[in-house]
Amino acid sequence: NHSNGHDHEHDRLIGSISITYEGSVALFKLDNFFAAIMNEFGDQLYRYKGVISVAGRDQPFVFNGVHMNFEGSFISNWAEKEPRISRFCLIGRELDRKFVEERFDECKTKDLRFKVGDAVQVNVDDQFVSGKVDCIWDEDCTYRIKLDIPDEDGDVVWAPDDTDQYIRSFSSRPNDSAMDAPVAKKHKVN
Image (cartoon, rainbow, N blue to C red; front, side):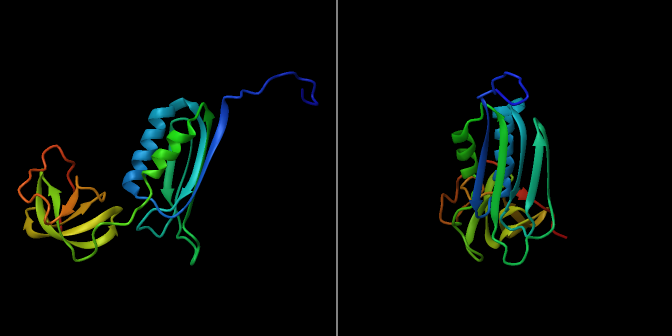
């Protein structure tokens, strides 16, 4: 009972989920996170907003939205020595905290398996080809790989994630086909 005299009961199914994480996330996986949240909750999401630290970016990713209307972009650079802290809040009806936390945990960057100069195999056009890691966290991807033998599109490809689907140790199964595995992002080199 409020002071205005109206009797009503608040909807106990409406709540919020706030997440804070000191560290960065992989953009490729963040896209999957947002898709999973929209797919799982859809119109149950009333409002959401946040600031996310993305690996390899000097700018925070800021997003907000209402229901399925999502907006997000990178804004001006983090302040010098500012901690890279990701924070966001979801407000909605019957939101599952465990689901949100588990999906967001999948976005967090982990220690990478390869370093610059490592010989690797990368999935290009449905087969693994050899190359060397040329850069880490470039073009919003985990690795940039310079191919040992350039093809018609050039000599550089990007692996969006540090998994065997995209990139693997040079000593791993050298004759395996990469059929059914996602292909590394390809760019023409001029």
